[in-house]
Image 1 (cartoon, rainbow, N blue to C red):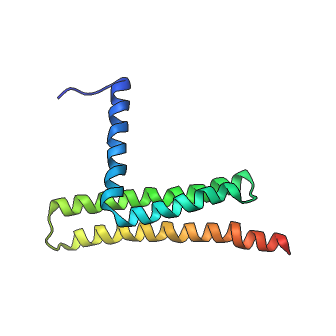
Image 2: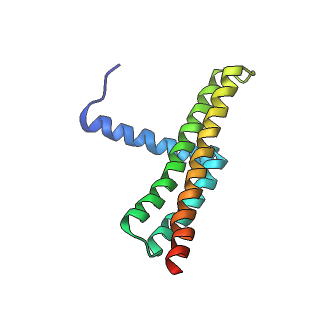
Length: 125
């Protein structure tokens, strides 16, 4: 098997990444829901009167949720590929991936509430 190098490797990696995004959109309802949140909240970060650092934080945590969901979906796909019968370690792997998504969503909610709601409320008073 010939190894791809240089620009060919970069182009193939781009194709694989695009295919992964398409698969996530097609097969993962949670990814579609979180992508919808990103489509709403990322433009909102540009509309609100924020500092550059605040904007980066809001967009960063929003993108982080998508990244964690993609990794969770990858773990689930590998576990399901190995076998559909119950195994304690398979269940643990899926639960840990789900917990990672939950933690990223809690961080997302905290950062958005702190910077947008609490931060604006305190500055207004």
